Amino acid sequence: MPLAEQILKIEEGFRDRPYNCSEGYPSIGFGRVIGKKGDQLPNITVTLQDEIQHLRRRIATIDRLIPEIITNLDEVRAAVIVSMAYQMGVVGLRKFRFFLRSVKEENWQLASEHMLDSRWAKQTPARAERHAEMMRTGKLLKYYD
Image 1 (cartoon, rainbow, N blue to C red):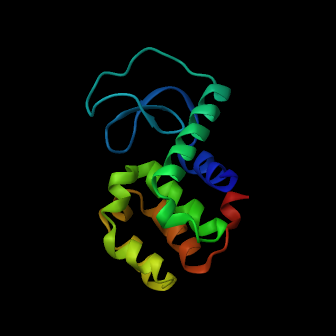
Image 2: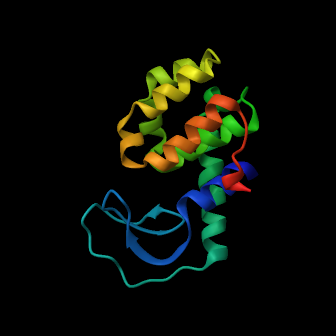
């Protein structure tokens, strides 16, 4: 899913050395978690090309795990949901029951409201606002061009 990759590259940013994400997990590349919360950061580096391949594999895995959610959606809304699953995990995404019901019903306004009324939105408010707007409208924001 090229659009999901485009969105995730911008949202996650690339770092070739380990760092602690906003939730305290050691991460590298495009937000790839590489340890448990509070673990010491390893002294490693990664290449951009390797991490792009990892990102693509992870997106493909997400696509296979949530087809019932994204199959009938337009490209923008499907990419938003893949981005959410990438960030919080498929298990975390599945906990958004009211959001997912609104998506199934194609009630985009309500779906965007559910997105913003969440712990996820409090943790990453700017990303949540951008994603909610795209879910509501079905249009890619210029931010991702």
